Image (cartoon, rainbow, N blue to C red):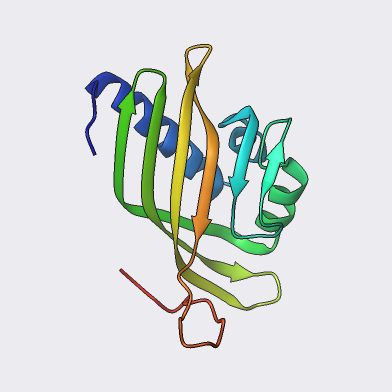
Length: 149
């Protein structure tokens, strides 16, 4: 992807890094602050689409999800690519989510994520988020959560 302005790319990268760190440290307020007031989200958890008129992704849902992990949350990314043009930016990456759930089960999976940003009042805010896992196309309808890059 083409980046039109290295300074803007650095600002978007900083916004992504701050979101990633907020997820690792389970900082719900900082997570919510990364999103625009209205965001369209296609994330791993139901429903199929979330459209919010408040800061996304909804503090209660995020707090509940983060609370399902005992101790720290592993949230690492790789293969970040982005394009910035004017007040819009698009970034995509692979994310590794890991940790021990409160029930003792381990979570260890890779997901795909695309983030759409808009510069609002001088800050890059997420206006669209799409996360997914591949699915086996053998008729089993099972998510391919065992894949690794």
